[in-house]
Image 1 (cartoon, rainbow, N blue to C red):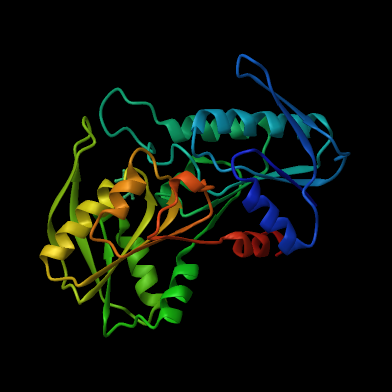
Image 2: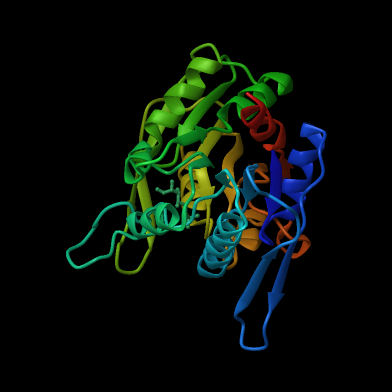
Length: 299
Ligand code: R5P
């Protein structure tokens, strides 16, 4: 097996290969003055099973193009199979037409990936289980929920003191799975609305009872609006301590600032997306998914 890394999250790829007891295989990625990239495989891959690690945030278009070129270069160099690990799979939220006239972007991406020649996709915490259906090749869908469950247990946050909270109706499945992992920890769901034209998030209703410690679980934090809106509502509903777990730290715009200034005590994310120093803040802690990915590759 040979593992290659695109430029989006090399630190994660390095952790994965360390756990596998191998080295990253070299790639040359040259950027021309006009922004175009030239990708070249620098190692013999004939008849090898090749793995490429490349999440797509930030700059989804740039990272996807780089991934397509890496896959093409491996194919042309004689790779036997190509598995792409896209820990954060960009465009996954555009999985159907929300309004007439919209593109189904995730379908476009899946078709290109298959066309360039991938044999298998490994992704983490996809926004909906329907995304797997956009592919005709095997998709391994891993989840950081077990990492969160272990962490919550180690902290001693039990079902007598804590309630799991989904910040929207779309997260119910996720929260039910985690509740089961935590011995049926109670859960509540916030009724969130997002204006599709402006993106503005509002929420004024919670289904379920909130204990003194509220643990919000989400698949991703982008602008931070969902988390901050949920936290404000939970505070109004007597939550004393608000903790957040989200798999993907997209952290666009002013998310780090508004999360740091929010009612939230701590924000736990994973390293599916590389979080540069200028996006880190004191309430943030990053848990690694490298072990989970390495285990999936060696099984
Ligand atoms: C929405 O359905 C997702 O699960 C996330 O809650 C959402 O994408 C987070 O985005 P933002 O941080 O911009 O509110």
